[in-house]
Image (cartoon, rainbow, N blue to C red; front, side, top):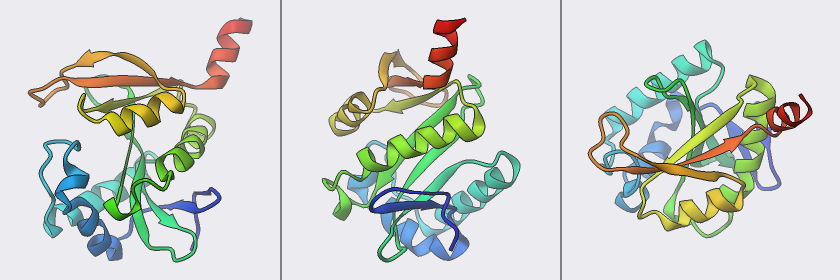
Length: 179
């Protein structure tokens, strides 16, 4: 199995159709989905549609949200990666993990590697992350990993504001300072 990148305990790979049950277990958990999108859990049909959309994005853009797997077993325990925001032209970064994997530092472990990959491979100048203002755990992770709070925005199709955080490409910062 080819991994996109690896950390000490985790690896990133593309979601595959045979991962539908594992992704359904993740997105079918109301606690996991509490701060994701419309907060509704996903049925297996929506999971399969999402995997297909991800596979189209892998083929057309080279990136999307990827499966996060534990290196020991290769079983998907989360999702992490990028998605283009058509209304702003920005690149969104996001992650989610199975509830039984919360508290293990997985988001803090995989995020720096994924950001570095996006900055180096795709040349992103910056990435944004939007979170529900009630999601204290994600706010702490983003701030710990160098994201800066940009402000609150109501995103298209949403009724409530999201907190928006930005992580600049360190190379872009160095070039701007030296230029």
